[in-house]
Image (cartoon, rainbow, N blue to C red; front, top):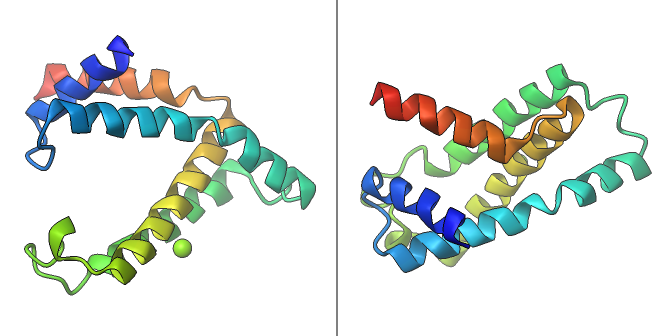
Length: 132
Ligand SMILES: [Mg+2]
């Protein structure tokens, strides 16, 4: 619990959209709960014999494609229109599903490559701390 909070606290300093430390904790608890679904994603792919399609090249391209779909949800909005308080329930639903698509392919890629995402994120944050 403390580790998640500490990681979140560092995140807050550079993120003006996070309003409270409690909100940060919730975000990170949800994130780590999401990581459990790697096994579910693998089972889904295995049940459909999709492992032949889930090469690192294809998965990285799928992430880019889904990221493009996520961007499209915001494409013509102003900065203000894109803020959470100004989005409709339908927009949030559509955005949520595109975020899920990106995450599913990202988690699948980490699974296929044997990358520990949490370790990789911590490693990258250390690099970022020395750069910024
Ligand atoms: Mg999509």
